[in-house]
Length: 256
Length: 186
Image (cartoon, rainbow over all chains, first blue to last red; front, side, top):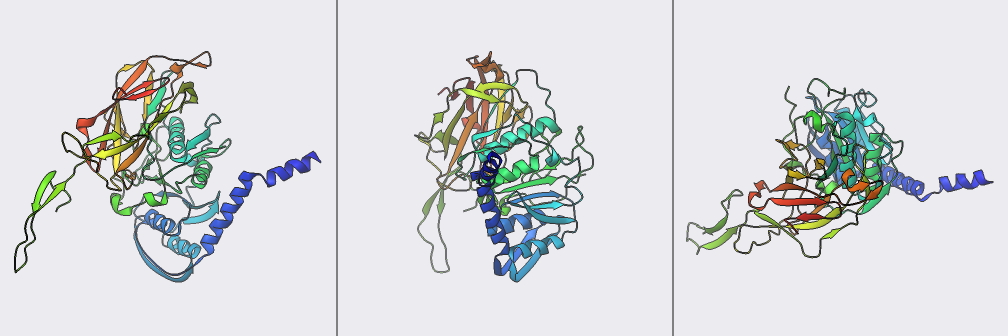
């Protein structure tokens, strides 16, 4: 009897119901038909983010910024679904695929997604908690924790942290999320789902070499060269309204 | 008027094949300082926290909203423009009793020996030309035998860059203490 009650509580817990509702809403968005849509984009990530902003899709993009992924895209669709639009974009960039997971449209390069050099496969340490924090600030804190794993700071014992976080023109509400046991990728999906920042982008550099700890180096949309090792990894965590392609530097291949 | 026009008054006339209009003054505002928006300022109570390295400590977070102001003297005027980009750079000074060893910033990265970069990095002011600011501190030094306490202060300088203009005449002095954070001594 108690097992049945526990199972019922698990199946119908508020968090689970909310996740199911979000998954249903996302699938409905992907199935929605579009009479006509034209896209002019500067590479894969730009294309996906423009589509995500237009149709208000939560997305996670992990891509390698090489010449192939930076190819310009001009495309017009008539009477297609939003999911069909994403599929046809990815056909232009061989090696990439998407799937719906954790309530977001996850776009990834198939040969990189599971490799151990991809920091997104790291586990979030148990001590990291999100309790009544703004989603953007939680992302900054998560980044600090992951940087401490990928680029150990070797700080003296007792070292504290200060600083500044600003949410920009996106009003944010505090949120509480349990991330215990999650990978960094899953944590970002959960943060995107729960917060006002609906798009995360991990840009792997095309530059050769790994960090001293063996991870792929990263850039961001606004910082088109790899960050120093002590700041690896970095990523973008954006609200739909934050993405203004005209204000980002022109995308180009990483300097070798 | 060019987007990079010099600050201050610019006389503009319109000339057609028939006539030239009377001159009209255009005042070009340049981001020069940030002021705290009245009523936007609060600080949490000191509470336990965990650093990104997993160390236990205590600290607070001060939340406020900055208004971007222009170069007008003696009273700077607000620049009520949306989507101005911004970033900040934070440098420790020699006063570091809380032993702060790293600093979160708007854009991340480093500038010399300081934390942060001038941006832009996808953060924009709202329609009033304002930006929200959260200043956290989490320090093991603020905890003794599992209890939050006081432990002196750390002073850092924060330099903002707004819409490409570095606000070098308005560098904010951040004083971190266990129970409060001061901006320019307040």
